[in-house]
Image (cartoon, rainbow, N blue to C red; front, side, top):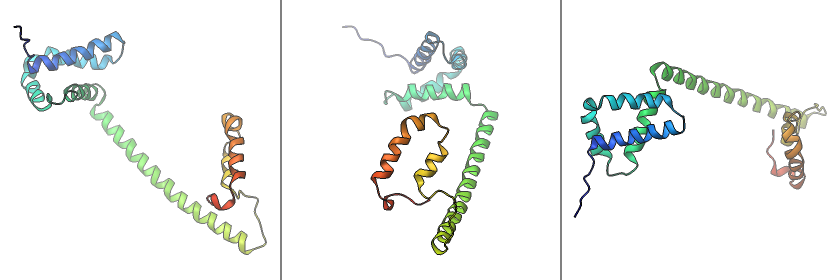
Length: 169
């Protein structure tokens, strides 16, 4: 009776790394990750204990160890402290921009409501949009694909439903 020996935790982790590198080389992708894999394989003696801990924690879940190794490689290859700081700054800028947009949208909504009230209480009219579809059409007037494919369908839908079904500006 032949019993296959179970690979060691280190061999299991290194096999995952080797498989990843083989795939990357065959597809000519991710050279940065390949460099990390080469470093990890070259430092196998230093990583033996770490591989053991990872294996003990993750081996019961079939995809956990390869997923962790993949995340480790991409993190090491693509995330550096300066990139993280830049990404955080951009995220903060995006959050700030979204807050400014929300504030301006609220101001615009109040102005549109005020204009609507003025139209209702006075005999004056302004040459402005009155239907949300008009706004969409005006915004897309130079958009070829909208004009070629969407505009007719939008008009059909607009004419199919009464005013009460549409949002106000």
